[in-house]
Amino acid sequence: MTLAVPPTAPDPSVRSAIARLRQEFPELGPGPIVLVVRTCREELRGSPTDALPELVERLARQRLRVSLD
Image (cartoon, rainbow, N blue to C red; front, top):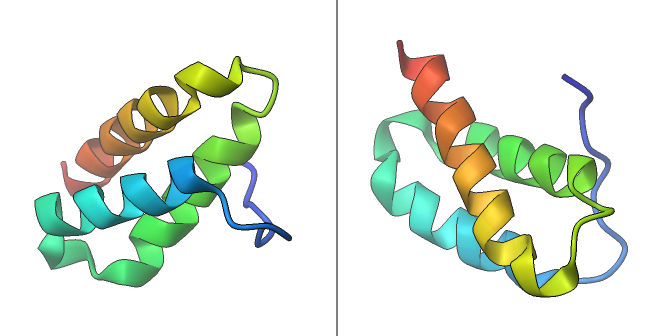
């Protein structure tokens, strides 16, 4: 997995995913969630803009679940 660099501009798909996933995975704390979401966003950079919020959140959620197993 490639680690993401912080984005230069705010990204609504990242902000909304982080907010929801922090509620869903409070035991992980904000740091790992932010890193996973930003990494997923970077990996999905060629995806259609309208689909990004859902794709980013789904991919990040799956990776966070795996990290808890």
